Length: 148
Image 1 (tube, rainbow, N blue to C red):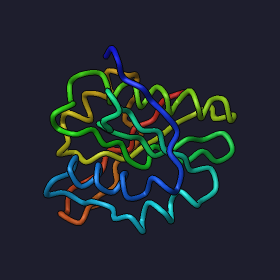
Image 2 (cartoon, rainbow, N blue to C red):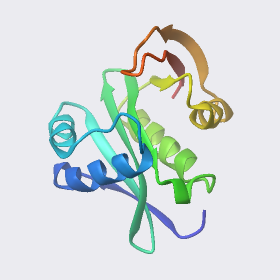
Image 3 (spheres, rainbow, N blue to C red):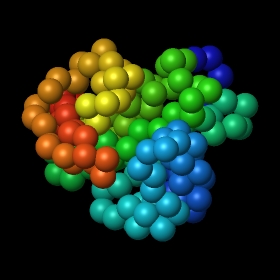
């Protein structure tokens, strides 16, 4: 993963995040600029963008409240997957949340997203529950958690 820079992104990056999200989840549920602006204006929410040679390749959006961190979304462009960017973004999010006092982390992931589930499990996340028919396509969400 040489040459990858991970930087904080504020509300002014909402259009970039929406674009990356749409290109990463082609055919899936995507969030628009307004959604990212709203989220980034919320308490404890932050984004980090991964780029190589100044080209954005992915991002993570997290929310930290009290001692819990939630991954709201993680997006990596298809052309940049399996290069360590997703794992680096997750680790950067966990480190930032830990610095703000988080002790545990959780997320929801579609049972149909095998690549994401494998990424999280390899990084020490375990199943904590399931949300039935959570996504608009009717698929369930696994709730994964881990210590920060």
